[in-house]
Amino acid sequence: MNSTSEASEPEVKVTPVKTPDAIKPKHKGSAQLFKNPVLERLSHTHIALPTSIFIITACVSLYYGITRGFITGASAFGLFLVGWFMFTFVEYAMHRYLYHIPATTPGRAKFQYTMHGVHHEFPKDKTRLAMPPIITVFVTSLLFFIFRFTFGNAVFGILAGFVFGYALYLFVHYAIHVYAPPKNFLKVWWTHHAQHHYRQDEIAFGVSSTLWDHIIGTMPSKAK
Image (cartoon, rainbow, N blue to C red; front, side):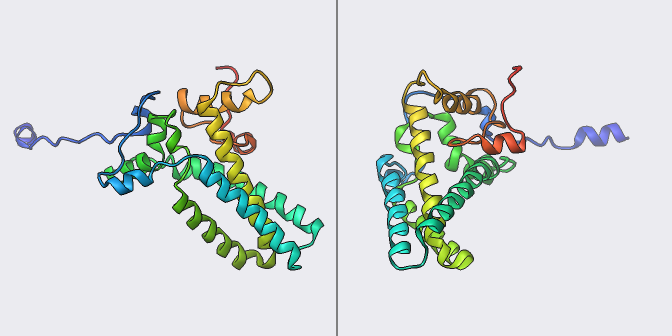
């Protein structure tokens, strides 16, 4: 009786969700993320635009804070380093926990692919190695209000260090994917990030710094 009942149950087909592990890198071409041509165009940008915005923001923030007396020269340097240190952790955390969010549902899979999976599929696409300028301006403004509310006048030093770290990250990430590995100590960055892209995407989340990979334990295994 039980066998007859089980045999009569309809077969349920499960559509597999596309996960980052299933993505094979393509070194030519670019993916289309949006059907709307305006949105699609806005999803591409030259690396110089967001990098320049962050560098200018860092300089203006320090200059304004010091000349207006909100921070002094000595404290500005210390706050700058604090902001830079904060960015290294945010870079690691966002890359690991947001950009590599488990694609357990179609919605999550689409979000993950749009945010980061497309970069794993087309790692040499130079126009998608940084956020578009309009989003860069929005993120910079949002960071200012968050840091202003949290740190008060120290925002001018902390914001400068944070966005400088962001600019450094963009430059390093761009160089890693566009240029050949240098024959010096800087090759460590290239090797570290290549482990993440071509070996296992659950390791080596740091890009501009390997600090948090060392601390949290996501460094690539030397034995392998």
